[in-house]
Length: 109
Image (tube, rainbow, N blue to C red; front, side, top):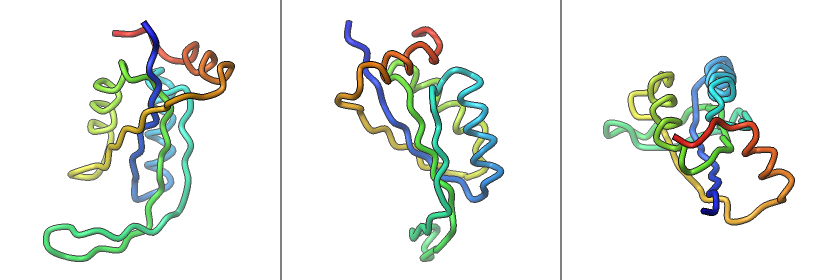
């Protein structure tokens, strides 16, 4: 069975929270790599009001079979009431990188 790799995206309001979540996901071996970028400016509607906030974006490299546990951990450790959690499939990539990523992730559930 071919392994499916994904990139999961979420955002947090502070660099400290973003770093803490990134570190946690890698330590739990739910992510092989997490890149923290920002600050970025996000515009969105929340409770009927237009919001503009500075946020930090996490790009989380993982496998599809770990997504449910990964999402649970994001929700558990995320300060937002409704955190952004988006999953993008990795269609293809460097064989060496994907082999490395797989070695860094926990076994399939």
